[in-house]
Length: 158
Image (tube, rainbow, N blue to C red; front, side, top):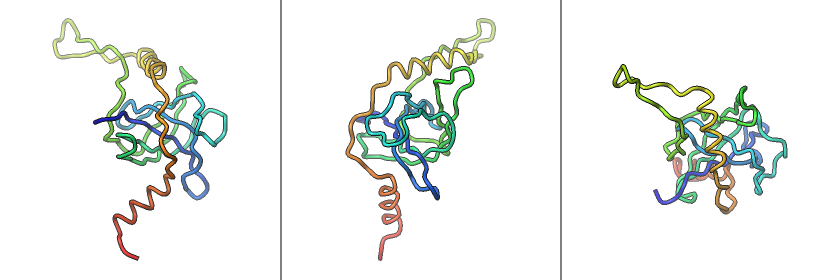
């Protein structure tokens, strides 16, 4: 792997078509991405931050050489309304950003590990956001164009 994983977030328009680019996220688990609250310079959508609802994401690796497309659902965390998790409709194969949480082994039960608390997970997600760099500038790519190219690859001919 020569590049980092970048998650571009798009609105879903009328009829289920991919809409405007509304921001980016960080892949924190194969099925979850953390929405970056900073406005994206390439965003053409609303300036209101995303809080809930359906979106479409393009997970890009190696500078765009590998792209996965997923529908996703945005979830605002009750305890931390500034954090929005995107639940992907499938699992990505892209490398994830590790969320720094401590998992400790029980002193009295070797091989048994403690679950981090919700507060510890939220603190870890905040650390991921604080350390996140904006995605590199990539040439504009239409997600619908990617889907059309995939369709042509799978079904060549007139």
